[in-house]
Amino acid sequence: MLSNLSIRGRCFQWGQRTYLMGILNVTPDSFSDGGKFTTTTAALAQAQAMVEAGTDIIDIGGQSTRPGAKQITPVEELERVLSVLELLRPEISIPISIDTTRSTVAQAALEIGADMVNDISGGTYDPEMFGVVAKLDVPIVLMHIRGTPETMQKQTDYQDFMGEIYDFLARQVALATAMGVNQEKIIVDPGIGFAKNYEQNLEIFRHLKSLTALKCPILVGASRKSFIGRILNQPDPQGRVWGTAAACCAAIFHGADILRIHDVREMRDVSLVADALFR
Image (cartoon, rainbow, N blue to C red; front, side, top):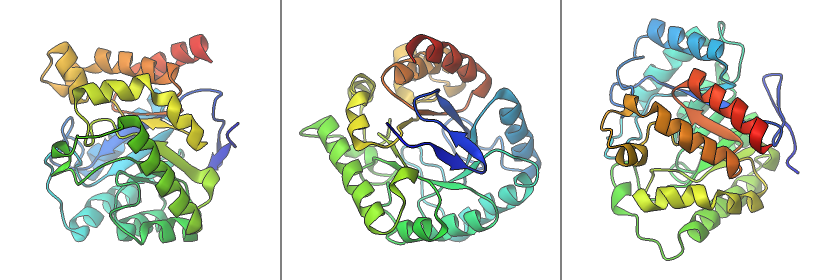
C-alpha cells in the first residue's frame, strides 16, 4: 500500500483514483504544441483552462524533449520558465511541477513557487539534482531514458527490455534516497517514447504492473505520441486525442497512478470512467 502524498495542501491518495498532470510547454519547438504558449499571457490562459477542466498538477517545461530536440542553455531555460511561473503561482492554487533535468532550474523554480520536479533523465544528467530535491523536501518524478533527446532513438537495443527499465528506476530510487530524498515523494515513469521503438512502447503498457514492485506511484506520459500516430496513421499530434484516450484507459487498467496529458477535459472523462470500471 503506497503512502498518501500531500502537495500544496492537496492529498494524493494513490490507488483511490487516477490523477492528471496537465502539460504546459513554454517552448517554441515541442512536438505537439510548440510555440502555442510561449507568451506569459497565453501560458496563464492555458493553465487556467486546464485547472477548470480538472487537472490535478500543471507541469511547466522550458526545454523540448521531443526526439532530436537540441539543448538550450540554462539561462534560456530559466528565462522561459521563471517568467511563466511568477505569473502563474499567484493565480493557480493547484500543485505546479517543473519539468527540467537541471538542478539550477529546479531550485530557482521551486524557490518561486513550483512544488515538485519532473526529471526526464531520472536524475542522471545532473548530479546535483537529488541534493536540491532533498534539501527542499519536494516530490520528484524519475523517468527512464537512454542517451539524450538528440540521441535516444538510436539507443533502443535492449537484452531484457522491462527488466532494464525496472533496474534503472530501482537504481535511481536507491540513489535518490541515499542522498536524502524522501522515498514517499518519489514517482516513477517508464518513459514512453524515450529510447523506445514502436513495439517497446506497446510492451510498456502490457507489463506496466511489473513496476509496482518499486513501491512508488507510476506516471505514464503517452499523450499524442508518435506510436499512437502510427497506429492511427495520423501525422498530426493534435489529431491523436481519441488514440490518447485509449492509451490512457489501458494505462489505468495496468496500474498507472498519474497520466501526463495535453487534453485535460477529454482525459478527465476517460479517467473517471476507467476508475469506476477498474478501481
